[in-house]
Image (tube, rainbow, N blue to C red; front, side):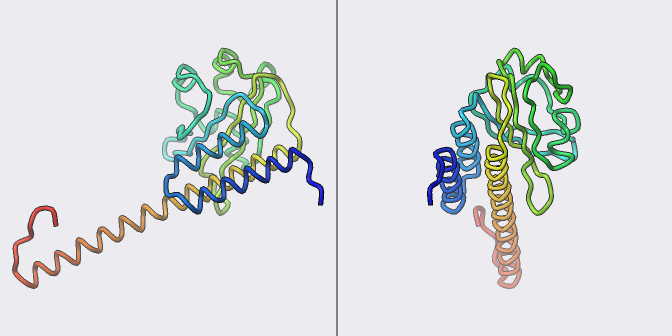
Length: 198
């Protein structure tokens, strides 16, 4: 079955990310790979992944590619102020031209960075938004259905990677607490003093 060149690139990228999720415990490596494939496959300028701090209503940058430090430090990104439909409505949002869009929290910073268009996709796990994947281009552009579908699939992989990491962190924390309780019980039963480092 013939697969168009663009779709082959998308498939290869998806497989690469899937393998990374199953073979590494380093979350940042996986998220870096997602951003890289998102940019390279669509020939974009830059990209970033942020996780949603719901308590403070902020999108906190986890990884990025090709963004300047000045742009990164522009100020807090509020989930209900910066392309809010992406996070609040759980749907991809296309900003074809930053000059004509009112969804941006920092339009002047985007212009200064040389960003003209944005594709913002929520990172969702089990119907809960946990972050956002955004890719940026230096020219005004629309995005095809296949391109949006591909970036959405990468974002879903990001959600799996984040939740896997959180789950492993919880397992390790629970295991550590259980071992500490076991040692406490052991020392209380034997009457032995607990040594430093145990």
